[in-house]
Length: 197
Image 1 (spheres, rainbow, N blue to C red):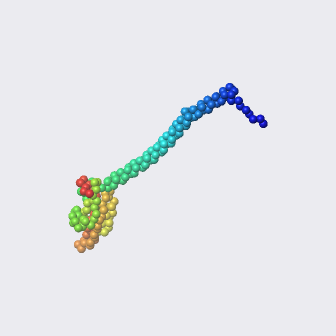
Image 2: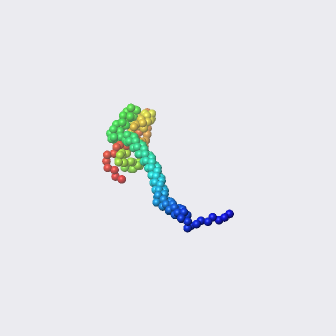
Image 3: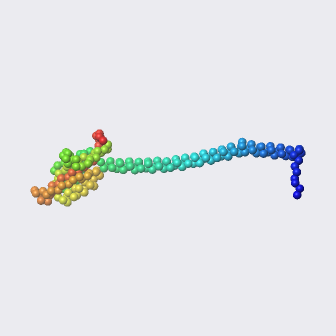
């Protein structure tokens, strides 16, 4: 095989080489001026789109978390309102309810008074919050066992919270089927004073 010889002095070869160099230069300029910036711009848009997608995802997560917090807040508020409905508006109203229940169950209340004996009062921890306070009362009564049981059952069914802290039952020598009963109870009433923490 005979080697190919190119005459670089020929005008047509020089013209082809010149056009090839101009074409190559044009291609390099196209790559540098148009193609690379376009690709870079596309990559930047793609990166921005990816970041935006991530931000949207994060925002959705935060909204779901916020919705969960709002739901928990609403549930807690409903529980609080329900609990506050069980707190008596004032002491006389709850004591009247206790008296009415006693009469209905054949329990004769002989006295009702706030627990003022500090020694006894200190035996019980009491609540005072910005919304309600726990008050201790002593109730003395005369009753048979069955009537007393019904009285306590009716107290527990009250919408208002009443806690029986102590109960003492003694035989009554003067009344053979009646017993002397001493109850220490807590009643919860809406608090309108200043809370000292």
